[in-house]
Image (cartoon, rainbow, N blue to C red):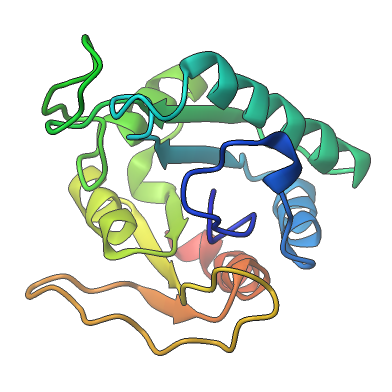
Length: 186
């Protein structure tokens, strides 16, 4: 979500901080038109840390959904992990399988939506996203992390040993194009 669909502001604490990258809604619409479900999976450790509430994260997703719908596109589902082992708000202080690079959110989305992870693509801006994709048996696309549209495109972050992305692209539009050319081979 943050750094892939919308600008990454650190902990998004106010709804007016939701700023879409200019290509995001077009990319989501292209995937929708191809009949591909679009699902957001996001670590939201700010809940465990006492910075955010689940209600605020839900409201954030409602606001994102409204803006995406205004662009004639849709996100089919949202999943978030509120946990962090070093959090301070019970019951969120825990290690879990849903926090990326764990694949719990991908597995839950697959069950809920009838998706096959081996025919799915995970797009994200960190190696945690790639790790979650690998753990679930999905294909992975690493988007070069950009905090805002104005930022220079950064170099690819150092790759953890043994972890490979199927593709490394500049933004969500490039990821959508890559998916659309590889979907039949998934």
